[in-house]
Amino acid sequence: GFYSGGPIFKVLTKVADEPNFLRRVAIAFSVFALYYVMYAWGQPLLNGYNDTCNAFWGPHSFVWMQVAKNVIYFCMNLSMSLLYVVFISAAVPVHLKYLAKVCFSSLIFSGFTGCILNTPVMALDLREILPAEISPGVEVAWTIVVPFLFELLVGAFFAWLLPLVAKAVLRAIGSLKTVK
Image 1: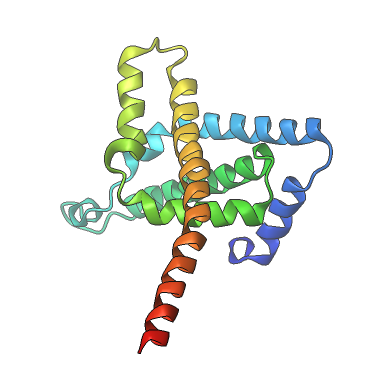
Image 2: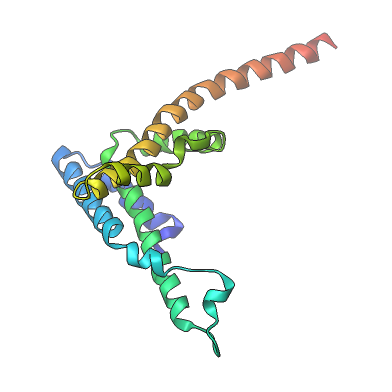
């Protein structure tokens, strides 16, 4: 299907290699706007999602409607993930290979970050402080910008550091072999 590789990478490459700057901005803005709408209006879908065992059983029968609610939420969640990827490929002016390299490096390090990447809690904190009119937009922007900056900065640092460490380790191993 679309997610299995070839078709999605053709679309992402076409978006990332778009030479017209205004077209890339238009793509990024429209994808962000759609993401925002799904985020702002998707709360009932999130509220309807429940995958605990007792959610699927009513007093006398299996609750098929809960399965439908969960599938609809899953489709929305998957669509929002795809929109995030399309937004990144349109908004970031770096090559996708470099972006993949720094994303992998930052993914390895993300398990050691603690609360730095806990953007849902941060978004809820922002919701308590900000006026209701601007809160959804700021929450979406925060949820996108914080991990994005983490990916670029931390990922770029580790993508630079890893070859240096690997070369030093290989030299040390080579030195130990020649000593024996």
